[in-house]
Length: 307
Length: 292
Image (cartoon, rainbow over all chains, first blue to last red; front, side, top):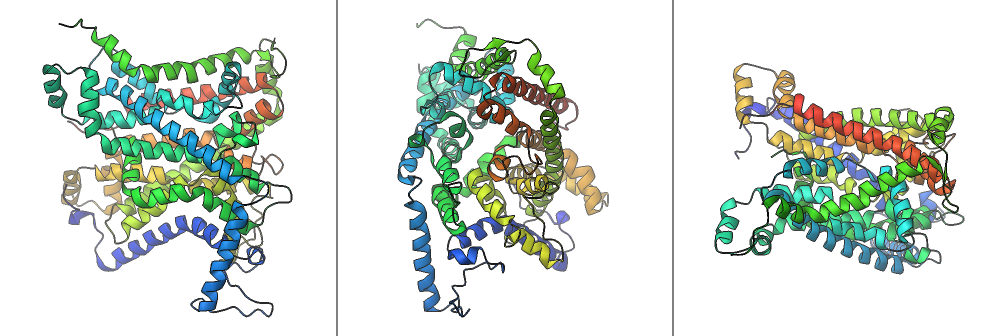
């Protein structure tokens, strides 16, 4: 693909700089809430309630004198305040974040494994085998992508209650072992792009579908599988609604349930501590984003593309 | 020679994980809730059949209408503003200006922020005295607005916060813009079309599948707005942010009225299915496909 053609640019010079400035302002506006949350997680409690909205913490003393932002005294105050806020949030008497991290990690890992494996198998059936009814059934897959969770939460609750699943982790990970519409779609698009000759040759050599799935398709599809795994990990790590509806004991809370409980605890939680707790729960996803953002963004973009 | 299975059976076997899941976790619960929507069911006692009473009750239930109205207002505002905004940002991102990679990441990042953390952050942003939003308004001489406490403002606060999550639309539009054939632009340049005409008569028609996809998806997702009002306003003040999903949740899990909640959920299912069918129909009719 060639990079840009002159026909799309506005004049050049001044117009281009104004567009650049506009674009950067948009980017900063999208970052501002997260940045402000992070800055708040570093502030002393009094500053979070102050009327002058400062972005960075000031650390003023009683007489209102604040150390310069570049001074050693400021760095020292920042370090100790951050440590105090984050440890107060992590080790608080109400929510056992250590336990919730273990619960969330367990559920997320089980969901990722099941989602990727079973969606890959289904995607193979929707792309590498030609059979009657395949494409009509795939339309059903696409249609289910459009059914949001809140529409079926009450019906699913009824089902899980009959099955004795309420109050267990099962509703949070077992369904993932039956694939998910979006992951099936993502993997199918990728599988369709793998040249047919590869598995046809293998099948002439006596390789079964099962064999070509494991030995040809999966190894070639590693990048797509990785994106599917990442997206599913983020989805289950961040999931709030399923645990809200299906989990009923505090010892089975996930991190997001814990964060919501911490925010609402009796008497309310100081802003700086609750922001620190938010960043603790977001840390794994933010780190993953830093390292994989290009692949993630491209994976999400495939949704809108028709083959 | 091994015995050969008919290909449709082989295909069905391969897609069976998804098919079983579809029946088990979607079709079965949806069918069960249809059954319970014709009953009175408190979860603690056996369900009692009541015929159409739940559906009839809806017609006279003012909260049903309030929640429906709030959801529609929210959806219309969010889809219109969010759609225009994400298309605009995507066009900016496709100009290969310096800093594009950073801005794309910044716009996409909020979609990965869990709703609980986002609700906490935005509740703080919306505070009247020391919130970032009122500080910004003050600098242009407006406000302060009691975003989450004023019944006239609370739903718009939800719309504003919802815009933060339009990164997925932006990313999809960007990919679609990249796919617009260069030759079309060159032809438009030869015809001497201006930037705006070029956008309206070349760019938009070429990316109509993406426009349709994004509009349908954001409509469906906006209609199910739930966690933000649950966490930030509990549906208040004065039911200003009582949205449909929240009303279903209240009935099912707080008022113990699973029968009525099932009927409400069915109304929601019918709306979602209708929209999906409209979308599939439209995508056949309206969208422009390039000749292969």
